[in-house]
Image 1 (cartoon, helix red, strand yellow):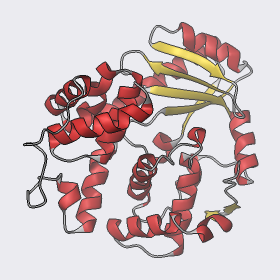
Image 2: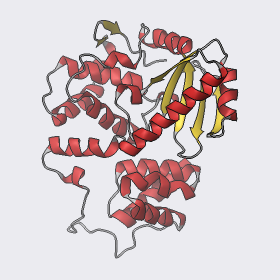
Image 3: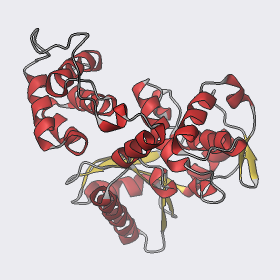
Image 4: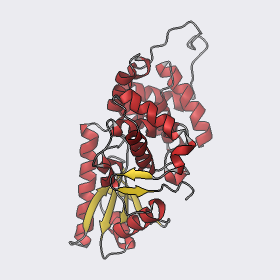
Length: 306
C-alpha cells in the first residue's frame, strides 16, 4: 500500500475502532500498512492493546471506516484517552510520557539486541570496543526506537556488515553508504532495528554538523528538569508533522536533543507541562536555530542546512 493511501485508510480504521484518531497509533499503523498490512496489529499492540490492535488491522484490510450511524455528531460525547482529556497539563504530559517510553520488556529486548551485536562483532575482532549511542543511551528513547551502536575496530564496515548478516538472530543487515556509513538491520525475533557506525565516522559527522566531537553523553550532566519527557513529546509531534528523522529531511534525534537542552536551559520550567510548552514554542521560533547551543562546557552550532 502506498504511503499516501495508507494515511487516510488507517485514519478511518482507527475512527471506526476507537471513535477518535490517536496520533501515535496513526503514525505506527500508517507505517506498518505501507510496508505490510499484516503487521499492523503487531505495531499497535503496545499502544492500543492486542484486541483493539487486531480490530484496527482487520478494518484496514477490509477498508472499513466509520459508518453513517457510527460517525460522531457535533453533540456526541467521544471517550478520548486519558492523556488527551486531562485538564491538568502536567498530569497529561506525565501520563503521555509513561505511555510512549519503553517499558521493562522493551528495554530488555533492546539490551539483549545490543548484547548480541557486541558478541557478534567481538567474535570477529575480540578487541573491538562496542558502545551504545543514540536515544537509548541518552534516556530519551520512544518505545520503538532503534538500537544505535558505534564500534571502534580495525575492521571495515564491510566486515561488520558481513558478520551481522551471517548471524542467526539478524535479518536484512546491509551497509548503507551515506555521509556517515552505517550497517542497518533488524532482530529477526522482535523486529527491532539497529544501526552500527564506526567511532571515526560518528566523530567526523559530529564535528562536521555540530562543530565538536559530541555524543549522547553530552546530555548526561546538568540536564534541565523534565528534559527526557520533553524530548519524547517533541519527537512524537515532529513525527506527526513529517519532520522527524534526519534521513527523511527532518530534525534528527541528536539535533532535537541539543535544541531542547538549550531551550530548557535558558528558562526555568518547573513542571512537565511548562517544559513541554516552552520547548514547542522554542522549536517554532526562528531565533532558536540561529544561536549557539550550549551543552555543558561545549558550545556548538546545529547546521540544519546539511
